[in-house]
Each structure stands twice: as structure tokens, then as C-alpha cells.
Length: 325
Image (cartoon, rainbow, N blue to C red):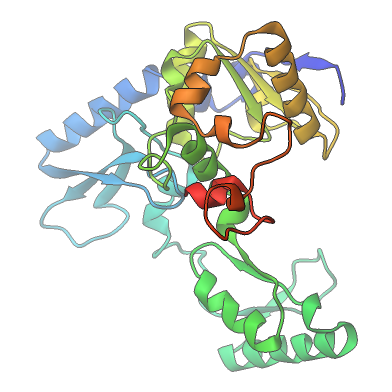
């Protein structure tokens, strides 16, 4: 593991020349929201209706305001999306900002495109759906015949059920759900720490606004903009943020310390932290015993507990967490 800590406390105005609003949003969590609140109020005075909504483009469900100009046809000129200034997790990332263009962007793809030049040339031609599906099926057949069924993998964000239609009929087990590389980790973490009822998608993030020190292990805060806004409140009040990641995440380009850990050493790093907390007596064992399942994960001799320790006839190869939830 690298022991080098990098802090890039550069001026956002210097870093993002031409992006003054983005700079202000990152440096001051209050300024952009006041500006949005003024725009929302102005539109209301002009006859626009206001509806609080939640963004479902990811599992964070950040709070937004949808404004509609009544009496006019729905278009990108008569519907506007803003972060909700009154929401505790207000967000406005590129996905929510592009909402109005999802269905009506002039550059949206209307037909499948097939590459006709070399990779990187950017040369494509429009083809029919039958041509596209037949071409993909032919490529899949060739790959399976040459490398076997397990060489095929599919993944999806919203249409995971449809992606299984590709892998399962072929006999491939490699149907990868988007959540496994996205919100599943956060849901599991909230389940283990806070318990059931606070673990699903769309639940509030931890109390970032009042923290003094945050350790981000492999997490980029850019995905849930509402959570980043809340964290910015703590950063403005002097909270220290440290990012543990082999690559430099976007948040580390500001006033965040970055530790470039070696890949695949995250578990060893966390175990080292736990060991140090036990040795120094800084772990809150009373909290762990009363409010988490940490006390049930290992025996006193250090061997892990299994399902068989909790359920009659339980499986000795399954962890105790699976039996509890």
C-alpha cells in the first residue's frame, strides 16, 4: 500500500476556467441553491407550476423540482428541472440535468449504427433492427463455438431481466446485475450498520453534514450529487475527507486527501484499521454490541460464525450474516 498522501488544494476557478457556476457549487453548498430558489420563485410568479419529484436515474433518489409552463405543449422549452432547495438530499448531476433531452434530443440515436471504418475513425452507417440483431446473433454464435458458453456475459442497468435472455439460453452463468458494481455495496453497508429499514435504494445517506472526518474507500461521490451537496456542508465547516483509491477520483481534485492504495489491498487496509482501533482502545465496543451485528461475526477463538451456529441444520459454509437477514 502506498503511504503517500496527496492533497490538491487548487483553486476551482483555476481548475475549471469557464465553469464558474460549477466552481461555486463545489466550493459553497449554499450559493447555487439560493440561485435556483430565486429562479423557481420567478417562474412561479410567471405562472409555472412546481412539483417536487425524485430522480430515479440512480439509487440515490435525489430531490428535484419539476417546473411546467401550463397551457403550453410539453417540450424542452416548457418543462424545467431544478435541484430542490428544500430537500435534505438535493441533487443535480448530469443525468437529472439532461432529463428533458432523454426523449427529445436532436442528436439522439433513432436507428442502430454499424461501424464501417476502423475503430476510432467514427465512421458509422444506419442499419435496420433486423440487420443489427442478426449481426449480433451471428457474432455470439461464432464466439460460443470458439470459446464456449461461459465466454458470453451480459449486464444492464434498468433492463437486467432482458439481458438474461442472452446469457441464460446460451447456458452462460455470466449475467451481471448493475447493482453488484454500484449501489449493492452501499445497501449492504447500511444494512449491517443501521439495520433493516435503512438499507434499500433511495434511503438517506449517512449524516455527512455533521461529520468531522470521512474515509472514502473506493467510493466516488460524483454518482449521487445530493450526497455530495450534503458532504460539502461539512467540508465548508472544516471536515477532513480522505479518499482511498488506486485511481484519483474526481473528488480528490479539490480539498480532499488522496491515498493511492495498491489494487486488491483494500481488505488488508481495513483489517489493519480494525486491528489498530482494538489495540488503541478507540473502538466503541458498546455501540458495536448494541447496534450492529459485529459481535456475532466471529467466535471468541477468532473463527468465523456460520449459519449452523444460529439455525438448526444450518449450512456451515454460509456466513452468519446470511442467517440474520
